[in-house]
Amino acid sequence: MCADVSRIELAPGYSISHVILGLWQLSGGHGPVDEEKVFEDLRRMVGAGLTTFDCADIYTGVEELIGRFLKRYRPQSLSGELPEIQIHTKYVPDLEALPTLSREYTEAVVDRSLRRLDVECLDLVQFHWWDFDIPGHVEAVSHLVEAQEAGKIRHLAVTNYDAKHLLEILQAGVRIVSNQVQYSVLDRRPEGYLVELAQEYGFQLLCYGTVAGGFLSDRYLGKEAPQEPLENRSLTKYRLIIEEFGGWDLFQDLLHKLSGIADQHGVGIAETAIRHIMQKQAVAGVIVGARSGAHLERLMQLYGFELDERDSAEIDEVLSRAQGPVGPVFGLERNRTGEHGRIMKHDLNRVRSE
Ligand SMILES: NC(=O)c1ccc[n+]([C@@H]2O[C@H](COP(=O)([O-])OP(=O)(O)OC[C@H]3O[C@@H](n4cnc5c(N)ncnc54)[C@H](OP(=O)(O)O)[C@@H]3O)[C@@H](O)[C@H]2O)c1
Image (tube, rainbow, N blue to C red; front, side, top):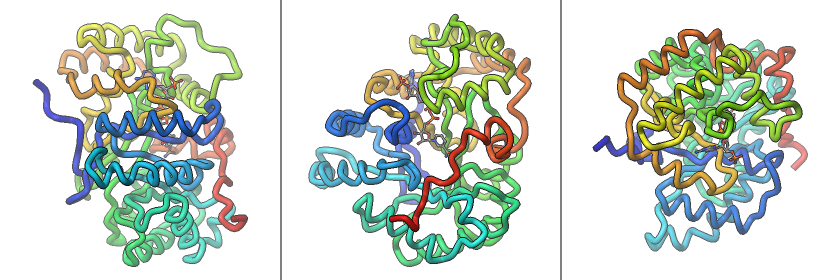
């Protein structure tokens, strides 16, 4: 019997589900959102123990949607019929706001998240900075610390931070509990210095991209590379990662390898790929895009098996042939003139227009 992986303590007294529901997929661009259906799916997933949600100030309409969900299900949480829910949001100031980012701007975004989610305190705020050539990211975090001291934020975190810049925040004495990064069997950029830093300073990794938008699943096994335009932005993003990895043929080798391992454990490729990351050092949680509850039963299988050394060695054999992606986490994406950076939207906050 394997260890209980259903929950993990992210900070003293603060526990989250090891599998986190990613809600970017509800912000448009991934098909229509039927609110009643979403609420029913979320209720079912929370009831099954997936109690932690990942959203952001820049995921259009999602904080408000979760606010309405919490209002409806709060009575059931309070009565113990549903477990308590943890909401992780983000603070992603617009690129053009960075040179003049003020305490007031930061406060306005935090207050807006509180209003939208209809809560008195944000469980976890993950800070993102688009361009480290623009000074000011440590100062911006100090404004979040002030909001934390004012009781508006429970835990501070970052997202897409490479080790070098995260160290600047840590050396300023800020307690960061997690760094949300892309980490998958295709993208191992967090390995090395960032993991070492996590171990030294006691923060943990929350990982997105573990199924590469669905590419890392049985759906793509033995298939030709899909033609543009792809079905959604997530697939567009991870198609580029597959190219960095080494291209479609090597990706197919990986899928075949994962499929063989998955068969031995009686699961699918997606669960094998997610489990591979769950077992990595410094990883506290995997954030899986939850457009609906369609994958719930398969996600629950993650709690019932473990990959062993032989499985890892088989995966490593394919990975030894991979070319990339290389560089620090989010390094390719941060370059606005490159193909990864060009598909990013840098102006979704628009705090002044609300
Ligand atoms: N910090 C950041 O910069 C950042 C960036 C990206 C994402 N995120 C966070 O991470 C979350 C996940 O986003 P992502 O881009 O990484 O997507 P992902 O989790 O890699 O992919 C999600 C998609 O994979 C498919 N899927 C999920 N479970 C599956 C399973 N068991 N079997 C087969 N297919 C499965 C689903 O597609 P179908 O619905 O089509 O079946 C789902 O919509 C987001 O919602 C967001 O919260 C953060």
